Length: 87
Image 1 (spheres, helix red, strand yellow):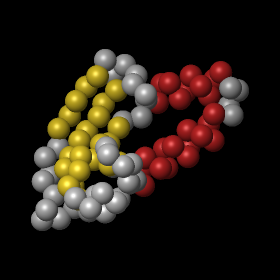
Image 2: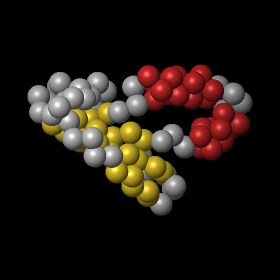
Image 3: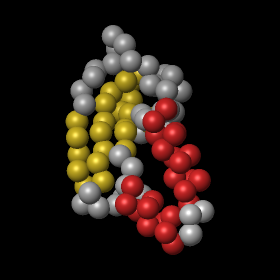
């Protein structure tokens, strides 16, 4: 799902599920959208928002190919971080 002013970072790391180097993506959450959903749902969305924030904090990187959230950084990983802005 793409939203305006959405920031995405990418890096190359070894994916244990795929078995080779893949692109891992870290997406910055759109907090204004979640705040609007909390207002619309009279606070019910706050539980989901909290769970998403905790997940993004604990496991920020996701394999672009398979969705694995545990990249292996090491000698094989090229830590080439790029920023892309959409919107």
